[in-house]
Image (cartoon, rainbow, N blue to C red; front, top):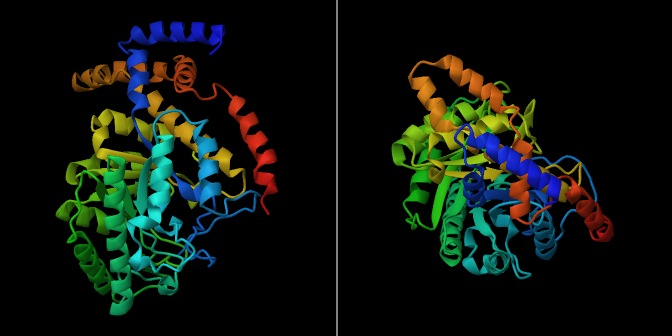
Length: 419
């Protein structure tokens, strides 16, 4: 970091100290907060299982050149992105990103050996790993139902797939020496108004009960259930709604996933975090940016992102929250999408950590709402940028906008050669 930026940081450090915030300690704390980054941004959610179409209400829009075509390309692309993202990083995998070793591997028969290539690579690069089951883009999901399916053969296939993923995730966690988080999302739902909502939800509950009956060590794997308002092709009824999963998780002690794009346009997950924490063991967050609806745009440094980060920090329970990104935009450079989104999420967490939280809570409990509001507003113009630059510098990544040149260079030398 150049001399001018270092001087700016020293000024910022003094200013934050005046309100009781130690910026050096904040930087050290943020360095150890893992952010899970979604692998599927790199290849448009195609995976390496087969060449079949993307189905299940998931769509990637855009045709920007350079999508990863195999595991080695996806790994190289992520390494390039990670070199420009500060802090501790994990990579979230879907089951379809397996190394099938040139053979057809049914999803209900995936094994640890199919993910050893990812474990070896992650250890070498200092990344963590998460793993999700993939309940879409498969002949057995063509009619829009998986774990709630009325056909017992199909339902058992998906139960067995999730159980197999559960076992692999535990293996990954043991190999990596840390928890491997798994997000369970299914596309099940109706385009038009159903008659037997109850029957489908009873089957979903039974499927989940069978899955969680297979015990894994929570030190190495935790599973979270992800609901939504509706999906493409499931506009009238989503079986795994947020209400269903919140009730299930609260009753049966499972983690809940909150996805920023899975609610009504004026509904925010930042307000739901403190509620869900009261009744579940913990949360997994899918931080995305909905435009109109679940369009999974690249995360920007907007008010809701800052609010999500503030609720995480203010809760005092960051250890119960797995923080991850979820967007897939094929209309722009995919490396840049990763970098922009992850850097913005890191910025939001830093912004939240720079609050004098206890002071603000003291104002609140003493009914001094005037001081609370005044301090919150003054914080908006504090020299946050100088602390962000210092954080990036200490993490050994680009300070400012220099990273854009690196992305463009990689696009010219690597991505443009992919056909």
